[in-house]
Image 1 (cartoon, rainbow, N blue to C red):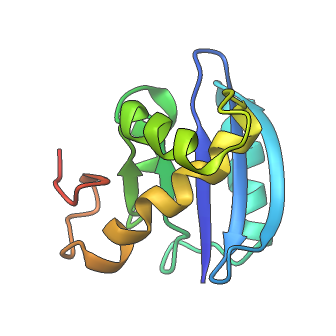
Image 2 (tube, one colour):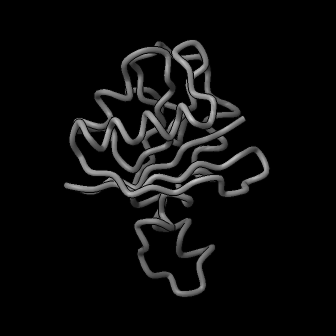
Length: 134
């Protein structure tokens, strides 16, 4: 299975795709507009994303244009609390410095428990790392 992690920012986002073993498959930097979303969709499609079998996404926020469009269809979107992710980064990083491309990878282990343990949710739900929906 493939997973997508997105480090969200106001104007641009860093995207990482990994497989079940945690192997990094791809990284991209996208803008927060239609062109950036198109790049994201093309990247996901390149790794097997389909309407019937969408790649799940973990992202640093539960709001914004990108989250809104990702929530359409059957895709599961996991909103990761930035403070929880910062604590995870502090425990697993030597420098403890914020790195937007690196944080796209940080969100994936944070969401693993939610992907494995969360109940099946309605397509429009955003699932937090704790397994609750909004």
